[in-house]
Image (tube, rainbow, N blue to C red; front, top):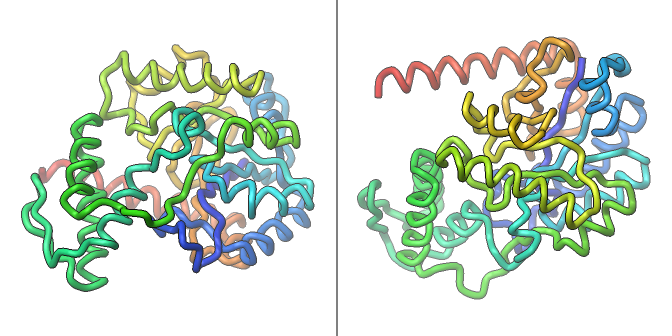
Length: 322
């Protein structure tokens, strides 16, 4: 059985670059306790070993754990990797390659959250959502969720246009500090120190909201970018937002990828779980070291799988009512 952990950002709760708090996985102190537990467990395996197990049938240790980071936020190198290097824990960072080339670009969710946070108007009028009050923290939180959910329903280019227009309507992000992605120079340094760098598309679109040719270009192009910039690239890929359907899986296969990662909760039984739709375990700010340990038990695995089934069932019911 293989459990795969998903991290995004590791930053202090007061870090001024925090815009979207839902992508903060842990503060540095909690993360250090989690890594100490994982190091003591002796269960952590590398991405290379997982690929070998899937492609050759080589067995993994019982209850293995793979650690992954999505989006290549620059605080990985500042807060996460020094701890992992201390404990000699292998990890993989999935990078959206256009952002590594142009680190001044901001992810749409960070831009949107920061713009709503800084909005100077009592209410916002947005196409598709109508009028949203943003006077209080509760109203702003509700507006953020409504906007984020709406973006994920749109075709990609329309979604990015909506984000641009929404940020303009709110006055933009001004001079406020925004999080950035690691540059290629930084990623090359991390790779030399043992971090696996892998593809996460070029521009982080929801692939199910793209046309077939654009979808393939995002996947194959990002994999080629990693190989060009780092010098090598394992045949692995991470779906943005975890969104994948039959067409995107076919595109991943066409790009030569043999292992790909969703955001579905649960464990993986190699030989039975689809290697192009591997399940992962998301780590959030509520995940203490003790909670993490509990989630990696057999009972924790059952609970995560049950929660995922409930979520999937709810999504099907919602779609059928639409």
